[in-house]
Image (cartoon, rainbow, N blue to C red; front, side):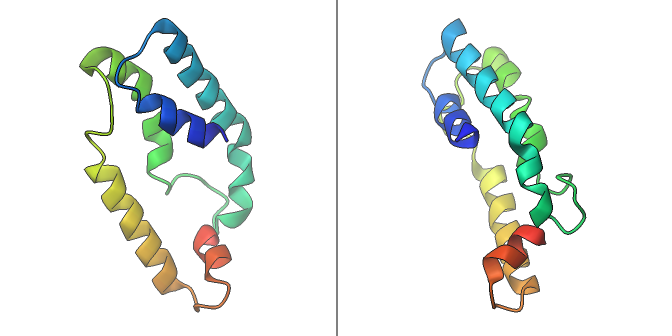
Length: 103
């Protein structure tokens, strides 16, 4: 839920101190629950999930550069597509979702 909230709030066309607080609350929710992803990672680390470190810089970037209303998604989408394709190719195609999460 926190990830979805973060994505939706970060995509607002303009922000106020209240929306920045909502964004911060969503980040805290992600931080509190990141351990839920670890059992599905083969090395028990989130280090190869490229979007996670970027999330913690969004609020500063929005304040410095303006709204992040879905203009600059090419890099994260390309990384996501590559990770999904690589994870699927590394699976044995049986129960591939669980294998992709662990990959």
